Image (tube, rainbow, N blue to C red):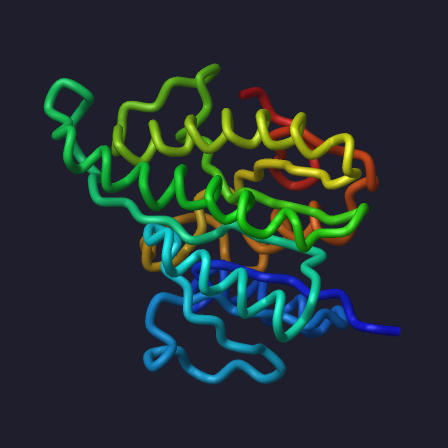
Length: 223
């Protein structure tokens, strides 16, 4: 049997790299989407795919490469993300900074799904890596551009879940928690394995028809 194919974006380090590594161990053909392949430390069993989710041309090229070399995509983990602001509030938020953050964290995943959904069979799984900072039910006051981008990603998740439901492709958002990565910082309480577990639950363990939800550690959380 042909191995299932998974694409993990932002896989050069942190959660993306850990998720990619563990999917290889689960028997997947894993594509690591990275902006600069030359800087990626080799990861056994992982194929490197040049991909900048903020650039439409890069997304189109990546989709064409996957179509040519693999012919299908079973799993997409939209993990690539940036945090350009850490302090301040929405009153001081620069529109340009917000726009750049949205382009990578929200619009990028949308464009990627639009480009890759035609390659996904029934049973395909899309996981959008979000954040508790995007919850409207528990408003956050840190990094407003980042939090707004994750709220937007959550809304995109719901829309895509409905659009792809007739084709049997599920779309969910996940909060991996505050993890010790370059983005999360050294004081974060969770390690890479714990954060990756939350993401991988949706890829490997969630019921096949589960779609349009927001999850942490296998439990549904409020939007």
